[in-house]
Image (cartoon, rainbow, N blue to C red; front, top):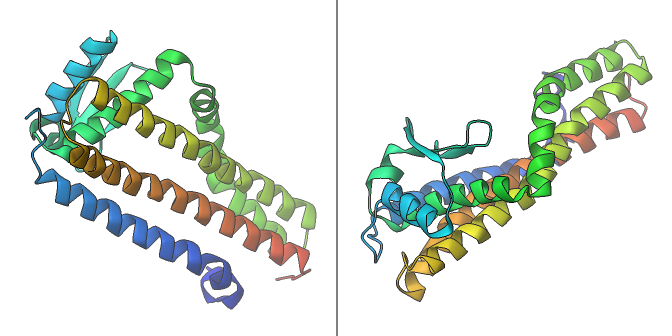
Length: 231
């Protein structure tokens, strides 16, 4: 908790925090705005998903998920899950998000390397994301630098994960927009522009996550590099 009272921490964290807040506002604003705009094909997210799957010959289980912005693709069970608003409303937001998640399914089918790397990092990051700060703080307070640096390395896995995630998400959006064009679900340039705005807003949240991970990592390294000790 001492980090919250350290001005140096906020020097690193403030820009990333501001970016995260802007990204969160933008994705919510874009989501809600274009959820009210009916797409030209008058398809719900669920209908669009099945239409695009048939067009590219991809067979997946499609389910509905609870909550808002809970849409995701599960490569383990080959299941695409759409939130109720996305699945059941014929909006630009619905088909854009559905196409993005189908882009992830395409990545899986194509054995897209960055996606494989990200999936392989998940168990490691789940472990090191909480262990890293504990080791760092223990090493810092006990003045044992090797332990603190071990914590930095462990936490660094989160930054690597965020870095790998970014191209995976951007590529999924590109695939999704291409699928929407191929399937003639968005019937005008204006609709395509609106769908791109929804997906760009979502991508910014991953940029913000990367910025937060890197800023925290740099803060840890600055503390150790500056030779600060806490007992």
